Length: 186
Image (cartoon, rainbow, N blue to C red):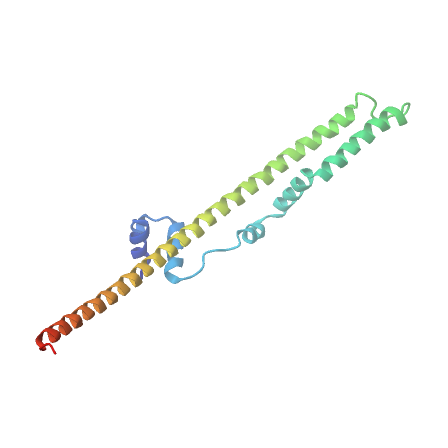
């Protein structure tokens, strides 16, 4: 394995150390120091969320659930049936349900930006995950290349040992042949 980050950068990435980005440098340093680079990006991301971020995620999670959709449909059904049939004379929001339209518009006006905030946070989380995946994949590739180099070195050394043994055997065979020729036949 290479001793320095610069040597490893030249050998593996074919780049000089000063032309590397922070991620590549961090990956190469972890390879040289033999330290793991994987981490739980979910834990780090959740720890940095503000109260508003957690609230927006909760609202988006609830607002995008089947439970919310079904319960809201039940609410709308009860509202229309209640104001049309049950409260015919004293309906607080008679047909065409103007107050209901106002409530739904306000709900949509509040819920849409909150859901967009949650989606933006999720996109940021996905970007962090993708960067982490790149670092882990690069480290794995570097380690695999190092293993290939070690195997190639071991194979070359084994081949050299085998060649030396073959040469020694060939030398001994030549010596036996000379000895056999120099002896008179019996």
